[in-house]
Image (cartoon, rainbow, N blue to C red; front, side, top):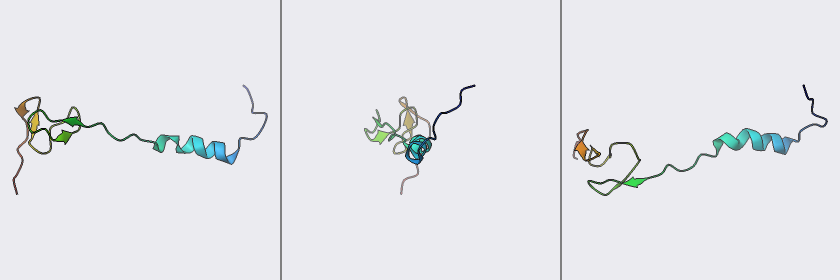
Length: 61
């Protein structure tokens, strides 16, 4: 098995360790019912519709 010839620097190690934290902002799509922004493949939190059908009931204030 190969062995490193030189020590890896602190900066390089920290960059590798921190790479998993770089999470993108989730994509948002427009709801077909109320036209508010929502996450794709999930029921709309505003109106409760998913694929044109009411799947959850929303309590009004």
